[in-house]
Image (cartoon, rainbow, N blue to C red; front, side, top):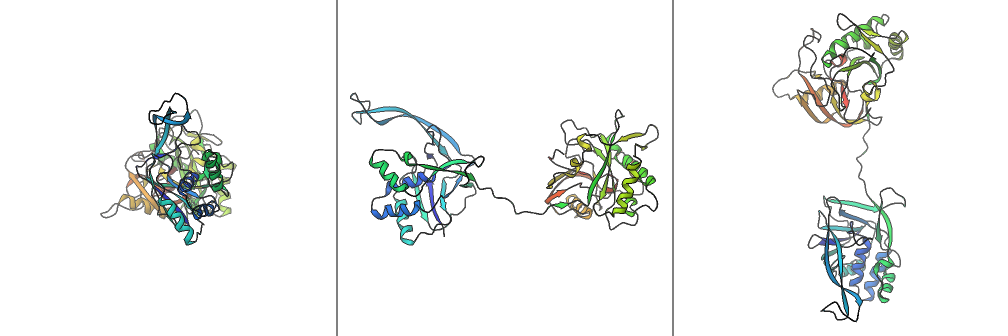
Length: 460
């Protein structure tokens, strides 16, 4: 059971001043509506129904909070002050005064005050309904309204937000005047002695009710660690289209250091059903001045790699530190660890600890399948991500051009392994159906640095 008082603003405008009369009251205060009911009370059972309502506790308010347009009118009105020399031609002895009155025009002409746990008996419900039908306005007399009472929750309005009482000191809370036990008699006493309704007011803090999505478990990448090297400075600029040459050189250097027999997840031979070590080149992306040049290389280590193999690999590249690569004839590329560039931080490629849903390619992806009639590029990207060990996607955007600043356009012609089939190469932005902790790498050449994604909007 519930009790709902729904107000329809006949002219779509709510005329009422806030605690400071120069500001419009919005959201509407529950006490404002209670006072409108009290102004319609005549008989003893009317007052009894109001006393029942004041004991029902603090209600929630449902109103359109977004796009509520405030306004103000200025005019001369008759005041209650009297003078021997009258200022009003209609009311002798009364003075006129300039008044500015604030109002608000909400996006929806209805709002509701709801007591979700209330359970009024039929006689109380009928009496409150009769009071509501006699209410001509809520707020000022210019705020004409139609009030209805139901013994159930209101039909939802898309524009409505819900505000509920919260604890004192809650950040961002606003105060709304509410009915309380004894409020009915306090209002009657104020009226009898010529006082104002606000003199009997009490307020509680309210905040919007935040509707959270159902908790979805975070998906962990098939790779759980990165060993990162930066290019030692000063060094020649390494353009992003050299990505495959850098990763092939990194793979060759690592393989030459790991003692035989080389673990299958390092060499990629004999581990087709398991995630391999991925050899990556790290571009400068997603910053204001990102230009796509390569700033370092990395090894992405499989999450389920046996500890013995993991230790052998780490020892091969760190005990005797890997300090140089030779991706082309001439001057080698010199490496060092411990650099603090954003691109070289692990978090740049793994994203937030709680996971990230939206990821975008930093290096182009070569899909796992060939283009054919009836198979879209979006389907091909989604399939490649699932094959690499990632969850389903809810949205895919595919482009031949980069979708984030600094992303690499294409590998340099002739730099890809010659024995690989030529499949489509695309850029993509994907939204997973759950948060993902990276690194995210997918596609036919994911173990050689293509299809490396970066979490969008994450500082790293």
